[in-house]
Length: 266
Length: 319
Image 1 (tube, one colour):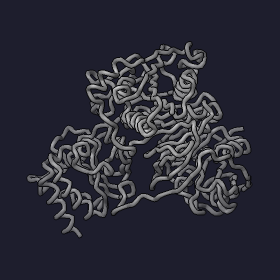
Image 2: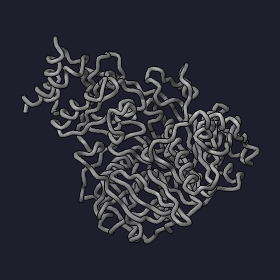
Image 3: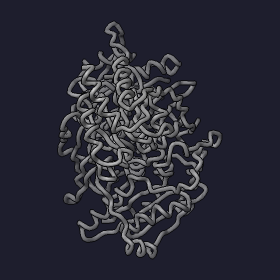
Image 4: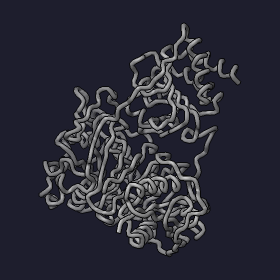
């Protein structure tokens, strides 16, 4: 099975709130000093799912694609070190500030340029914009079904059996291939790259494609966004905190209990 | 033509709570000049009148039985038919298992965009949707270049209006459903031992600051007393102190209880993303500058090992 995994590099979600800054005029996040961007926390699960399917089949190829700045190579390298076979970096000025519709188009074009895929895996969402729409967009562009928020995936005849996470449980579905599947954190722990794998990864091929290589230059660029960013800001936290007073921890606790009772919260 | 199409949802013949909330949001937008409100639902014709009572000006009921419990791809042509019939240029749906797929699917099919997990909406000659991003650290306001503007709305972001049986409107039925490429083999309800974290009215969570896993015993006792559930930060779960199934945060459960008691949790965005919707937050922390203390309603700045037992004792005394 030919599997493509889409990964994204994002600002570290563990960044302390105090270090998170936004340029409200440019409507962009100002990278926090000294905190390196990371692989989107959902994406290693997608890579893990791809590797397990390949291992179960005993054959196949896992290609990892990332759209982003040159530093997104690190996100690709991480997947290669986990065991993916090849990488593709989609990069260039045309991709700056594009929306998720354009991102999905670009990823779909890259998958087509690779000769298509039997299965496209993504994380359930990117933890920066937290939309979860790109997998559905790739599926739409490729004209194939999309199963979202998977917690388990297995080959089932010519198709796949997938367990999807719902609000109050899960659902088992069967999809024909090719398909797009987005993988949730419930999938389980992704493997940790071993030193030998990291060294092997350095020798694996990473192709670099621009908008012209994909024939989509005219559709990219901020001006072709369908979702218009009107404002981006850090919400003002009006701290209305009432610090519970008391001479001892026990007295503070008693005062807290009484406050909560008076406010009918307990 | 302009107007709003609300994608309502029904479960076993009854409208789900998000349906009323979406109509509440739609009436607000209508009041700001966004046009008339049409509601779409799959089910029986009787649901149409319920939607009118909750604020719709007209209702379109799709009576095709294959829509019941179906995936978004089956809904897509039905919603497109309702969109055409209503002439709406705004589509609102819930951030539900259906909406989280249907919103993007509809947007990509119609060459437009969708705002996911929308928490606020306003109409200023065009729809402006507010959503939270970067783990709750930032808010984005978005508008739409093409029509229709589509938003999936997070539960409890808007209030439903009280049902008013005297409201009138036209209910029409359609019979449209798409082809299912993906087959549903079965549905399993989550096995719940005690109260599910997501449903609990009170959540008591602990973080790395507990110092060791034994602290969770205390938190469980407090949670049980308050008929709530116990959660943990990612840091505490990563240390193996508490099961990952109880993790609250970006890569864990998202909760919005009436009372959230955060014990020894600093409040990194990873955690805030999972609990920022809590109605009332209590922080118990040694650090007065912790982010969690800033967002709390009440805070106790002290050692939780002394505070929690005294808190349990006092709550028992209050009865």
